[in-house]
Amino acid sequence: MSDRHRVRIDLHVASAPRECGIHVGAAVLEEAGEILSPHVRGRRLAIICDAAVAQTHAQTLAGACSGSGFDCHQIAVPSGEAHKTLESAARLYEAMFAASLDRSSAVIALGGGVTTDLAGFVAATFMRGITLINAPTTLLGMVDAAIGGKTGVNFPLPGSAVLGKNLVGAFHHPAAVLMDVATLHTLPPRAFRCGLAECIKHALIADPSMLDWIEAHSAALQPARSGELVDFIARNARIKADVVAGDERESGQRLLLNLGHTFAHAIETRPELGLEHGEAVALGLLAACAAGEHLKITNLELRPRLRAVIGQLGLPVRLSSSPPLAEVLSAMNADKKIEDGKLRLLIPVDVGVVEMVRSAPDSAVEAGLASISP
Image (cartoon, rainbow, N blue to C red; front, side, top):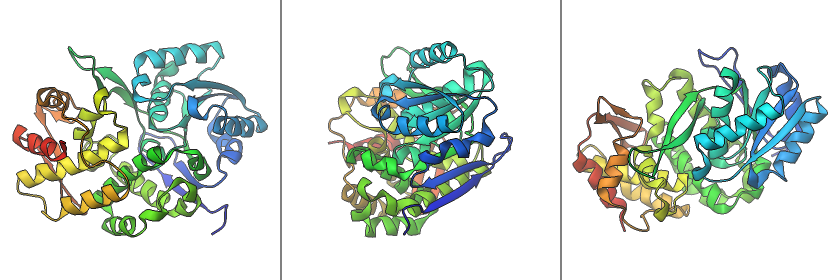
């Protein structure tokens, strides 16, 4: 396969003025200026980047954009969910005003899911919304966060220091998405594995044959071999894009993309557990299976199979400690999928079959949490 193998996926949603081109392949960042020129009216760009890539991929991106006549202002943000806050957004606004950005300018979000969510929220709200370009540098960002227009920051739960995931945000679709698989070469193995959790989720909701593929090719799923994974990454991006195109505002089918996330969001912001987002999603998928078993709607062969593939990929299958049940339940009851005060829970019935349980009982949630407890 050529080192320049590329895949382009076009995503169109009703609220966006034009299709969003999703570019997947090697050396995409080197051609960023040429790709972005049709999408940006002004000449000023804010490259909001994760501090971990400020001296590497951000330099490549800035050089490419400067070569196409853009005036680039690089703003680094600290890594980690703890920094995805309104305070961080305010600091970014200040930096953008200081750089004289205006409504014709654009934001490029360069980094992982945290940077994508935060920078996207800033682009959605700066001067009531300016052009956004997503350039994910993590597998999780490529297959999930960079597609679909969800932006947001975390916000403290009432009466608690624990942050609720993405409780403040907006839908703001990118004009283009640049997925340069070469950026994955510098990704730590743990971060790469986190992205694989979202790929398992996609297989569960929409592509049973992909779960077979993941089980058979686990050895190939590593950052050093990212060039061989262009089609795999594109396959996941297409699943996400297809779902979003059919349900932009998460009123129906798009809810399926939250499989495992109600459990995940309740546990991942607890500092004592030390979980990354993808690790929490992997555990959340297992917990959702166990909840489905409790409700007698999940195939009993599914959770053992899922547990095996999750473990095979090096993702956790149990929590390191048991957080207080009452606090986890409280966090779940503050989740965005609450409707009329009742918890809606997505349950995997089998591979490719997911059911929404409205008004899920606490007993099902408790069974799910018990299944991943140490």
